[in-house]
Length: 548
Image (cartoon, rainbow, N blue to C red):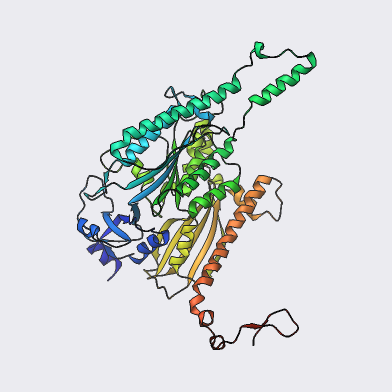
């Protein structure tokens, strides 16, 4: 039966919602294997009785046809799983660490609302908890979904040695019946935290009274004032390390929450932050990707304006990049909810390894920021001469099956950009993308014969660099003209290390996959079975020699 005949008989699925069990952890490999094993096959949603009696790792909650609208009814029928179908995963249990950025930049007044950004942080937290805890119907079904959500709330301040507790709540299971009491508890702790910060700053900025100063000789006056200033000073974390400390604390706090759950870090911040260098940023991203931790941002405060407080410049590019690179989300507002799945559910509870669209568009990071400062930068960014360019880095054959190759890349943080069946249905192409920096990406193309056969361990891969012209030029022409900038030198070295690690990982995968193909690797020799040693020490020597 041809593909056209199948399409005429069975409608194609546009989106599929799958439920993951909470009894054990469902890895990214299992999620990908489910999709590839059922590609071009028929699936249907499970009934409530089937869901309650199911022992499967993944259960089909809902299947939506292409072009489905929220108000349209969905027939409980069979659909065909095609390469363009978006697979969305829901979990029965979640764990979140919510970081409240209470650095000094939140002590200013938002000129758009007339409210302190410090207060807006609490309002955003309350809104987030209420909306996350709200039950919702899985699209296309009558199933009311309300998972278990464990949270830890941390308050971050850049003042070192602050006496207030920065862990406001640890390991709390959200409950609708006690949510108001919980909000009041958090509010009281934030008030105490704010008062403590105010007292420390007041001691620092409070002028020394003249009557409190001892009468000293003229020559000792300067020394006294210097000593007084040294006593009143206190240490503060630099702004470029604030985000690093918050993410590291979040990763540690997640280890103390229940396992076998989907993990995430939600940072509520005004966005006035940065990272020290590309090395620290890459290390943080690798830690988040390795632990399957989605890092999301909720921005409070208004956007940049010419009459705002000095130094208030939210780093939108960094927040959007980290969120998209770790399968998280970025929210600049607190949208109103509805009866169905709201924006908070979509941002924090859904997972999909297929992320096309805005996450692959460089303008998602840069154009919105350019509009804030200079409208001419927007037209300049659309200039073809400044567009993202591509350069092939390598291509080779990997003696491993496609599922294993793609699974390794997903664990490294790659996202599936596109999946197609080509050459008349005989070849499967999977295009993956690694967001290495907001203006630098790595594309990894995997091609294998279709249908997939685990016995055929042959996959063709192609690695392509994608970035701006100046970045690709520096990476490609370093040997001809050495670069004197330490920042760009570090950037190029780290990027080349990432490219080399791709080949090293593929070689290790081939080595592991080929272990059971050569009997000598796992067969014990007959001489060893009979008690003959592998090594012996000759007389008068201390060096063991292989027994022949």
